[in-house]
Length: 407
Image (cartoon, rainbow, N blue to C red; front, top):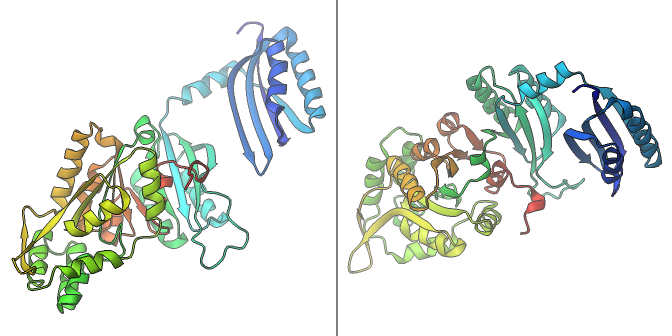
């Protein structure tokens, strides 16, 4: 770098078309090399940084012309020399780990971002960039409006204690009503291809077996077994067998009635539209029943459905038994792996979303496992969770911006 200087240009002010091009024309004229460049625009206010390497003989002319042009464009410019030692140290830091920290909630306030940025600092991480993924919120949202706010932090470094960081994020989720996702910033994160959902209490806001039980007059008994199983207190297969037995004699026409009235989870239409539009393969892996899974499959164009099939007698009544192998937690993980193989997708490119203890195996196996409005034990055992917004919150964890989504 003999006879050359490193100069950092910092340009701020009201953004306008052609501003960056005007600066580049000057730099090009003096054959400046661009060593680094970054730009952000917040509410039409520009912040542009350009690190240049330029011949010392013309550096003064470069700064003079950039200063004149900035005055003409009504923006501010500052110049800072960068010595070789500092530059090499900066280059050395680029090899460090990079993470994406996504912060999601109904709204984001200063106290929430204070907690997040304090945690990041304490963990020895540096914030390289901050990007808003959600659209700008209305000043006065209506009571009926389901608002969402999401900000993405690009971090560099290695956390001092990832386990403690996870614990802090869980605490913030409960205390500050935000959800946090910490993911390594690699190509797998940007190339997810297969997403597997639990069904009951995830895609729909009910447990279908409980709805069947109510109509069979055994609602309280089945609900108690369901809740015990979801908490992980009893084996899923045992609980499933006991619950199905209580449904003996129920007419199958009841299932059609339940399917046509079951409440969808907030955000499911938007989520499914976007996933299909961008080519994701979608699967339902459920400990519930195929009848309801296939109903959702027809409704949303889902690619795979694996659930449990109820046995029906010649009179159209449930026998209290089921057909085939029970889809429990272990089976869900096996199916996720199998579908990934069929679709030729690396496991790191898979996503799993669920709420119960029987979802933990697939949440752990997937490249991105998300506990959705889940039981405390499931949230504590999952790396990512969503508790504050609807199912379309998953899109922000995948890096989608509202501006990308034409729904």
